[in-house]
Structure formats: structure tokens, C-alpha cells
Image (tube, rainbow, N blue to C red; front, side, top):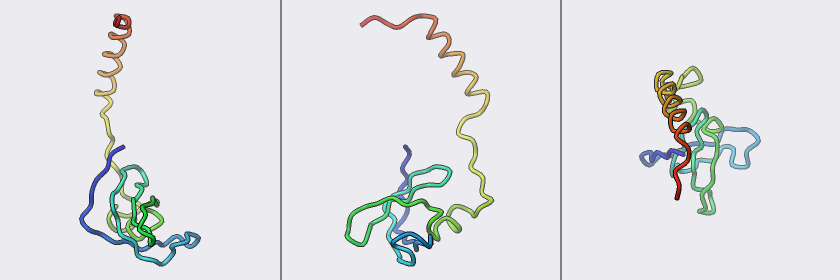
Length: 96
């Protein structure tokens, strides 16, 4: 669950069926992912989450709909982890 803290930033809710449609809200944090969640300050002061694609943030800060995120792990790295896990599994669980 990675969090990144953006500079003070505001977005407008663009999803037509969201109760805050058309309103500007302040971004508190961003949870990374394919469609990141924006943690926003609601009008009552509480925090809430909204998909970045439901705001004008999605089209600008994320690079648009054609943006592709780099892979988190290389195939070689996954293979090395699988080998290590297999070796650890063969040793049995440590006794406590």
C-alpha cells in the first residue's frame, strides 16, 4: 500500500453520478495503482477516497489514458524469488 504525498493540489470531481460532481476538492494523499485512489478532504473536513479517473486529475497528472505504468518486477527477479522460496520451503519451518 504505497502512499505518495503530492504538493498542495486541488482537483475537480468529473464523474457525472458522484455526489461531489463539479466541486473542487483538496488532495491529501495518493494511493498508487492502475487507477490510483486520491485521498481527498471532503467538504465536511473528513477524508475520503475517490478514483483518480473520476476527477480531472486522471487526464493530466497521470499522463492520459495511453499512459502505461512500468512493471513492478522483472521476470528475472520473480524467477530468483521463486527459487529462493523453493529452497526455503525445502528446509522446513524453523522451530520456535
